[in-house]
Image 1: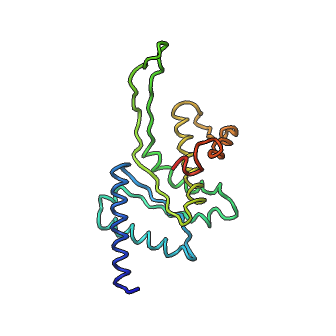
Image 2: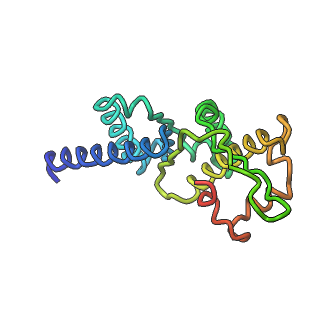
Image 3: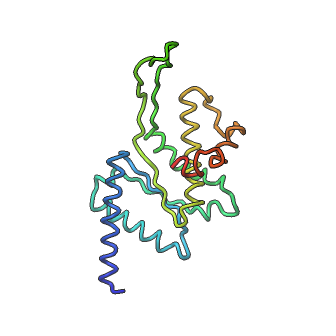
Length: 196
């Protein structure tokens, strides 16, 4: 492959990433890109190419840069030996922007005794951001990370609704966590599919 072909390929990747990010910003307002690939071995070139493309897009279009946040998390290093609980390090890094971007919350009055609507649905808050994961296998790393994001978000939502106290998390409820962890068996999708 010639250097010209490689340069053209990089330009195509950057153009595609710019269009993808713009579409996500148009839909969700802000985008947090979480890169979960290894920092060494055969995945290193993918990590470097992704970071190079992000840098090129952000430098070329400051408006996209202002609404895009890039976070690198070496999942295999941080969570080695099946220590998936350590994905909490990633959630801790993302928590400030997740809190700022919020979540959709609406309230609908209960249906009346006559079976009619109790009134208009009121929107309390809207979500203004999304987390996009990037990895090589698109299975374990993405699902573990997205499930952790889902647990964090659900905990915040249930606290906001008054279902959980400010000190509780959904993990304090083993019966619920059994359903959450086995969502496919309960017809809710597989891991990350449930929350991504």
